[in-house]
Length: 104
Image (cartoon, rainbow, N blue to C red):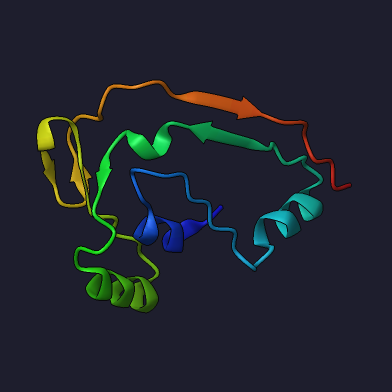
């Protein structure tokens, strides 16, 4: 749940997780009496090549002004259109699911 900040600072050669200070997701779960599924995806960061320092100041300005994240990435064969990748890199992706958090 890193949101826009995680999109801007993502890195394709290591796992990074950003956790927001706001608890909006948890508040909604309590209000609507629904459990939260805990999961993590290993290998997801390696699906695209990221360029975290490319246009970082501009992307941070856009994120802070308009609440829109613009990650700069490319896909397989170096093909990509800036923030719009075409084909992901091949590689294993593993989804890990933990127990549900029942907040009721």
